[in-house]
Length: 142
Image 1 (cartoon, rainbow, N blue to C red):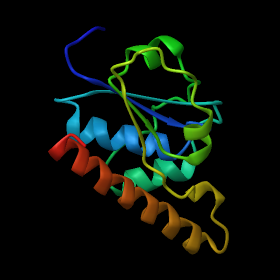
Image 2 (cartoon, one colour):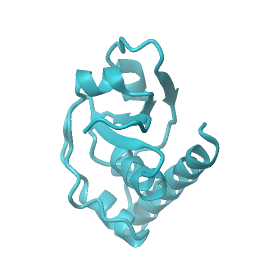
Image 3 (cartoon, one colour):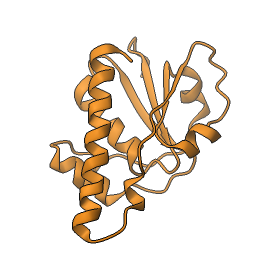
Image 4 (tube, helix red, strand yellow):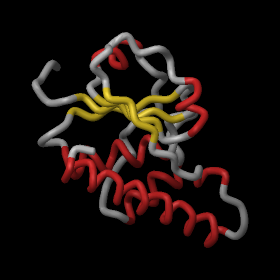
């Protein structure tokens, strides 16, 4: 499955929510420019609220899987982008010296509390913030 598109690897703690949302948006908005993968320090399973909030945005991530970081993918990635502080602090050593490593910190909507409406609103807020960041990346490459 080798191609000439730069590989973007989104990392989060559990690969259940923020990295899945980022993965979904970049595949939807930039799959012509980038190969996209996501993983976590652990695999917590796909968060059903992440699936629902992406469906509201017109993107189906229901077939995504929650994966643990693959050292081979990590070391061939052109961009490694962490989406939570824990993943940023605990990211494995990357041997690829040409990799661009960024940290885009987003609040964890899975930790939201309150009514169902408040939790749903937090997911939508984080989803929209990630979408804005992905749009900037696709447009400007940064």
